[in-house]
Length: 228
Length: 228
Image (tube, rainbow over all chains, first blue to last red; front, side):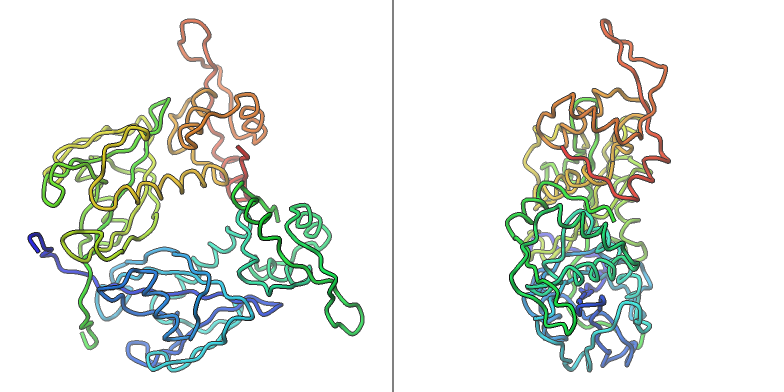
């Protein structure tokens, strides 16, 4: 190549914050590190970007290798590059966040990540590197996003109750929401389709709903504010 | 260091999309490349990240070196890493966008960037590398942002007319807006303070306004949707 770079280069990684919803609480998928540094500590799934792959491919490859997750909703979050964030030297990480529906595959570990497991957002272990900071930013992004760009599609099962969608919003916001007010505002958006199906609850069966994808997309495109 | 990386590493750069508003149109600050590749072509200001600086410091340093701009509003946009986006080899770029008020310094060139100049958004030259794609994403971000997070503060002069703020929104959206409807919605947010000062127009002097920072911040925090 006629013009090559002579500068020293940081190493480049990707890290993924994977959110899931189990019907009542928000969860994060973590891997137990199988190599140094931070051997045995929990961390976000991730690893080195290869020279021939783009950044999203690297994130998807690492996610599949370390957790078996495939074809999830994935968006770039932010790039982290403080000198000193990795004890091995200068490492810049492009962070991503993923949203996983309950029907998607459960995690399993590989060699780099000896173990993978879901943790409740309010019961996380200490994390390796600056991964707590990355996770905090991902949660902030998710909190902003549910107000102006509906993300329920990516986290809820295909059929869900109004109680479940409220539980999802409460889990993301980290606080309780007034039920009556929430339902009134939610139904006014008119993107839920009530089904003639009910949960098999012992006492009071609850009606299932699904999203109207067309209305939901049109609303997201036009602009949307869910005042909570 | 006990654990160093043995992998080949992409080079790492920062690039900045700098938006300005001249009172009627949206503008972008570009630099003419003084070195190969793309010698003589217009490009976004940017350059290599040094091993001892963080990503935002690199963006601010390059911006000052190439355009003399300092202390501007700067946010990270997205990281671009398609293999082949730079003819010199694998280069990943962390892109930023900056918003510059009219009272901030005009640009000047340095050695890497032999020339720096503002271009109207609807009259841009062809750009080096994948910088047109980066710019398109920055403009998308700005278009989204003005609907749910007011950004006028960062682009308007300290005192401005309602005609100017409408011109700014029109310039960002790339279309005309109904004046009566725009003013009604804008004033309903109650974050503008009308001043006892007027423009020196020959026929009809227009009232100047300023932002009420406190109300504006509270609104941005609570959530905001400007339906345009």
